[in-house]
Image (tube, rainbow, N blue to C red; front, side):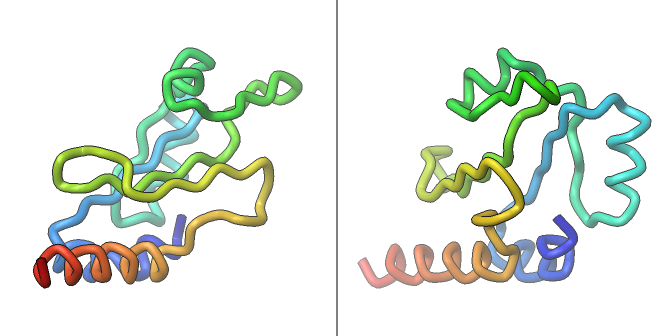
Length: 108
């Protein structure tokens, strides 16, 4: 998530927001958020994971990484689901994708 903080000014320039969510309790989520330039929600539940279509890992009682880029109309324009540390979105790549999508929209 630090990678997203590293390019937060690019997201702001694009008019984009970054938000994270965790299964952690408030205190633990606040510890994580201390090093980030965007909010971290806490207390994600199995029902939340099901709503997102994400994989819930029963053994550790956690949601596996689920990342989304939403368009201005709140539709999903890109997503990534992982079951471990490989394959997650990179902050700089996400900013480039948003920039690319905006340039296509501007070109008509």
